[in-house]
Image (tube, rainbow, N blue to C red):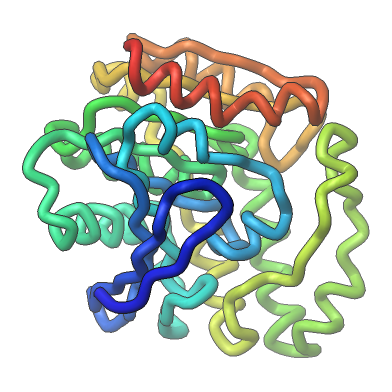
Length: 272
């Protein structure tokens, strides 16, 4: 590890990286105590999430957790190649488990993941449930019956980027953000243009584990969802809550309530 920076508050952030399956994956490490690892959503990064101001994880640090956040393969400061298979949830879960090994996690950790990170975390937890203690699943993405429409749109987007370029794709995106997060700034995707089609196609090939598979995952889980978002429909969150044996669901209808998610996560991780 090298370099240390400080952000508002009393926590130093140490930067680190690992090399896994041909990619350099960067992460930041802050706080002290039991380890929690956070995986961000698709197309963003740690830095972009911070600039968006959507989630505040300081309550997790204040609750006595060591928090590691990382940039997914080809996102943010991490590198990645042009193979769609590298960007399926199953492959991204392999990156997450490699990170845990790199960190020397010798006891179960708390896993946190948003959207693509939620899919990553669920696949990792099913593959290696002994590596995890609790799960915080934010804005679960389209899954099962709602996934195919998303996959078709992703494949069309990949074709547009390859044929006409990133700017043409961005210009053609007309879906407004959900009203509940309409005030959150929008940013272009962080994967480089030459790998973005592979990322889009890899996510098109992905789905959450089936409800039958999830029924065997007995880890405590907190599901945090918001309303009126076709990309993260409440149908997914509710099905997850029904399938996971030890899950609780909280749904936010306002931006102010979303701002409580950091504190809700901290309380869940320290009292369950």
